[in-house]
Image 1 (tube, one colour):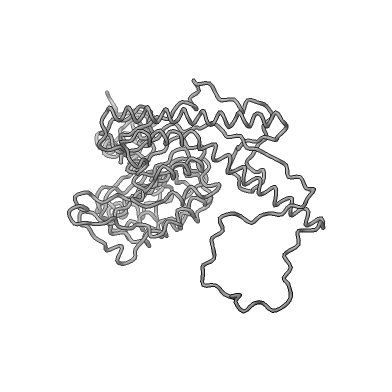
Image 2 (cartoon, helix red, strand yellow):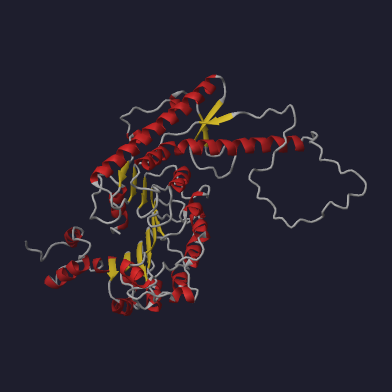
Length: 490
């Protein structure tokens, strides 16, 4: 095919079909093969992934005084563990239009480097991936001994305004087996405290997040992400592989992220004994009934709010309140201690709200929604193909049993609705309390289960192949979805 003399628009169309891995080399070869043709050179700068430390210095020297080329860089990545972090900070400081950012954070990075990189918000950023490895070939506790933790990175991101960030990946690589086993090398800490995770998930910056990958090996991250109301309501894919996640944690996650479609838990202890099929029966039931638990929790919150609202209204109206216990006059006994060495008991239940007699609290019930989980992915080591099939059968059996429980709950609520009890459903996360995020049910369709052919009630795809592409992955599993999101197969 004769390429010389073609219009610039056609060159752009040809370049758009080049493979991503060799994109720059192919465009560069094209410009050299037909130097007099109008090949758009901005394609050379659109996607830059550097694999060697010296390339960072060379690129910074090239772009430092090139104002136009700076704005051409959209997809930028550092895929080497040994870099001059100071030069990288300077390089990223002159690239204002990055929409995709991938950083390998190795032993040369200090927390201050990432603080400076993320000090200024990036409005165009749509993909952010941070992969931490505080050692490379040599096992070292250097970062730990000097107290260098990257908690402040999460805090810095949480201060950004409400931009649109669909995909966020924060991964700490586990130690290589050869290193950890040979030298008894324990997992080093990248994040000392996990509270900054909660702060980040509550921030306005990631309120539109759809895909989240959070891998912090052997750390119990569940309570820092599932106990936060109104966080990342649009989340559809969640990867918590290598974290310390159990079946009970998974239930809390499904209750919190009610729109979740794909849950990936590779390397987690989801089942205490993976070879026991009954464990997977329970997991299948949890996946199907999480919406019931969520509806009950929301119903309890609404009841407390209604009681408090009634008590506050009567107080403002001047109605008498229950009198406090009168302290009798006179000297107390000498044996009555005025102090106690015992710790104050933790309050397990909220304070009782006193509602005056005659005040009617409206009774409202919440109808659970059908489950929407499409796939559950984890890893089951040393399991035969026959055991795999048994596990999947038990999982689907537990799912069906959970749907039966869901139908029974809806049937009871339908009877209450026919008797005049007000019914509502959860339409969104509640941010203001009361009826916020609830909508009234006017017809009886909400009480009937969908037909068996409806995809939302089909059992989720259960994939036990684990991370990587070498295992026998099930068609439609979350692993395949995640590979396309993160552009890797780790």
